[in-house]
Image (cartoon, one colour):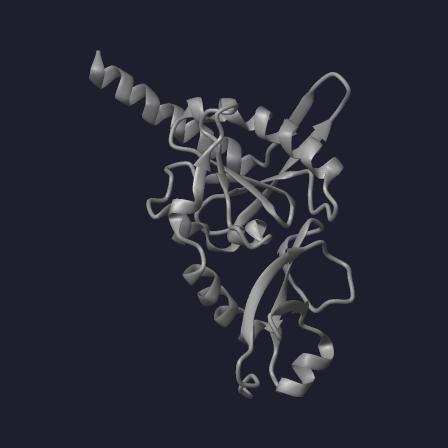
Length: 209
């Protein structure tokens, strides 16, 4: 890999698929990963021309950007959401909170039994619900509703959907917004995981009885 020019720092950014910026797919049809470069105390998008000049690729540069992101993302930046018990909000302070979706294992330290559900209505907003119990599912509809409104008023909207990580990959939890309700249509893998969580809860309840 050709080295970057001295003094440049890379940062990942979640973007919507389909634009001109070079990107890698994160969640098909919903989220992709691009790169930003810090140059002269400002951030700009990494372009196709940049990759050609540096004689490298997005795939080779992304690990460098993720390592920088980990250094800039102390887990103490998580804040509970008082109006939605079980939900956490990541306050990055750099306007790129949503990019922390890429380093969930680093941020959570202990991986939840049922994985984690996240929402990123815009680049500077990132919320998550760790799933350790079936009771944690109660926060999802509140999360989906809040995401819809935040997405509608965002200056640079990202997604009004929610996503689930099972520990190895991201899945789309389809959210349908109507005037009367929020409907969530999860994939079979998610339903199977919820079944396992329910079984664990049942065993724990029996042990406490």
